[in-house]
Length: 168
Length: 329
Image (cartoon, rainbow over all chains, first blue to last red; front, top):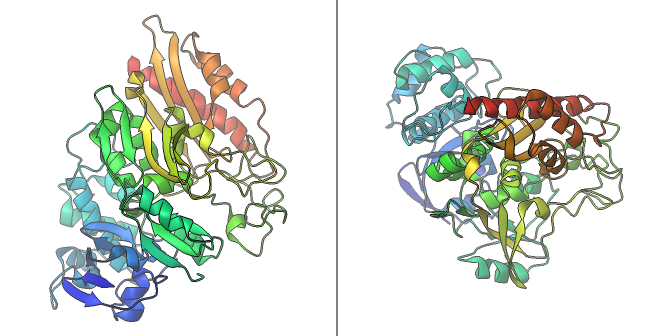
């Protein structure tokens, strides 16, 4: 099977039962992406596929060949941090850090969704051409990423500082 | 997960051909429910036929109707401008469920065929007639907060978990099917079954039959429609009760027409036929909405953990219809 992960090509002989998450962690040494619930409930395994966020635990790797996959390791150049990573440090957007790679990838995908005009459950006007990343939109759209340390306030502040026009 | 073969279909005919040569095939969409069930060995297919390469087009027709390819992702449907303006309740219903990540993975076909989230269905140490016919049901005397109050049976009190399907039921959606015996169409409300004595048989689909598209017939007044979901947390939780509603009001304040469906209350998306017929021609007033809700829930019956949902469903129906009247003011 042929994969494009963080800008590089890889070929693996894989059992079709292997999830994208297990491909990263068990076959590639990319352990940034975390296994939380392994059933799509916590978001710790969130990665980007062609720029869209998905739960890699529910993704059979075989279905994701030849798509541009980005894990937390690929968010920024080696030796550099993504601006959102700086903001997470600045705002204490984590305690144990286990959910953080998923939070980061999810936020990057989420902001792209806002820019593409994808509505959410709290978008009041479904016919609006543009959607503002305000406090309610941000929290609703990040609800697929749990943080059992409860660092939500810091996470929201970090994302808002990086992407929102006004403080969350 | 037990071993299985994997093949990707190029079109519906190819998918049916591939599934016809397997003993226990399953069509695979985004996998957000099926992969999870396979990992728990609740589902044990020996072959997966990937149908995500089939049509995901959303065809906007001049007569106001829409045709949505079964491989369309939930995000694509909820974002589509024609869906948002012609059938806002459908966009609202999709967005009320799951998470951003799951919206990006899950297909329309898979959403319709997803299985109950009853915890006893998932737990192979529990008794479940849906997972193991004849085994019994641990939900009836167990944790049944999320379970059915309408149309349940002594064999099964599970609910259908889809939000999207509640809107589809209200909107008279038609499911396009293709199988070894050819193509046919079926109303979404006729696709899912009540549990009866065979809760393991959940739909009217024939062996290896595939959902290829969903058709939303023209319904002009659906521009005034919405979906409200009541749940235990503000986001990313299954419904306790949900209501999809569209209301057509006459100039004299009477209900010219109405579409109403309930989620979280039954083994299938529950079209509220009784409430609809009670409402047509009536004044659009709270007491009429309440009376219609009473009529719909007259035969509801609760268990220890979900009795509250009977009153809750009535209140949500009343509130949502009142909200839609407000939109006309």
